Length: 408
Image 1 (cartoon, rainbow, N blue to C red):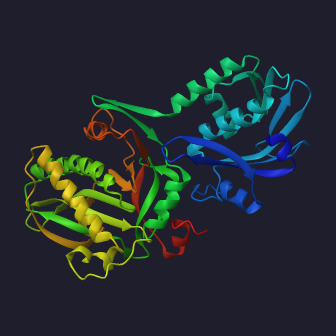
Image 2 (image 1 turned 90 degrees about the vertical axis):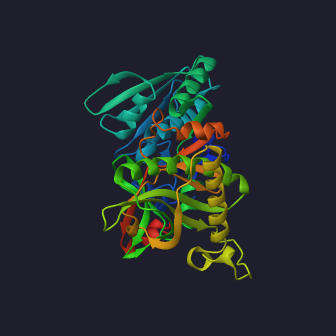
Image 3 (image 1 turned 180 degrees about the vertical axis):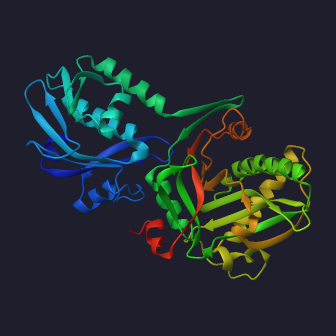
């Protein structure tokens, strides 16, 4: 276990996924540089950026963030300088406690584990949210205890806590579990998006991440599917309808096996005559492993602009969108133009859901689980897991590009 393998070392806490939204944590030695990345609040976007990190030793440390593990049999182990990804504080702290401290103590004739934490630390707040019992406080520290004498009860409590961390959306067509994106998803997006994405230093309007749409004045472009201009009231209705049809189209699209990311987003744009466009923008990010087609035809018309395979992705998504309108018995808008346009040209963009490979992501900060019919549409199509990645479009300087692409 950790106590034997990592004495006098820096340890990183890494979150792993089985690809189906089920997570587990592993611990391995890291370098001081990797530790510093966590302390600076950098996103866990690659294998070298764990979600938590700390120093562990059998000798006491000086400094902030110290946890003292005191087993009743007399063994004391010190965890110092614990740094945690802010967005995952409670979850990470709980797994550090359960997987490292409690699991290590079970079977060693230990009935109680006491944890000493600085009173004003993020760790102390997170441990309280983990429902550990406070048994003592002083001017600087708070002491938690965990009773591990009843292993079955401990396992039951563990499961209850895990259940509270998973948001489950109940619909008339089934249940959808909402998961936080794992490291692989973030890394994949940073690789696919031309200017990457960044974790925000502070939550803004509920968002934790930003998709870079403008880097040093260079914008991300899309294919704009433009309809006839209408009055504002009808344009807003059309935007909502297209949102629902896009979600239904995603469910069909992911069964076609494309590799890459796809953001189909309804938009609103006011024209000089006072009327409004309520169309669909297609931001297409094909996998870089796609092969270039030798044919010069419409089926490769957008590949030079967006990457190999982008045109096929677009054609199939539009086919799925048409089927969605047809199955819902809704008249499809009269789209009359396909143009490549910049993000800023669209004016108001509704970034609600996107697809990454075979995964569906919700980008909206507020899930709107009781208001948005999209969740029922997803469930009716057999979707059981959705990643929640609260995201805003953002602008960065060219000097920040390496960070946004996960290259730092």
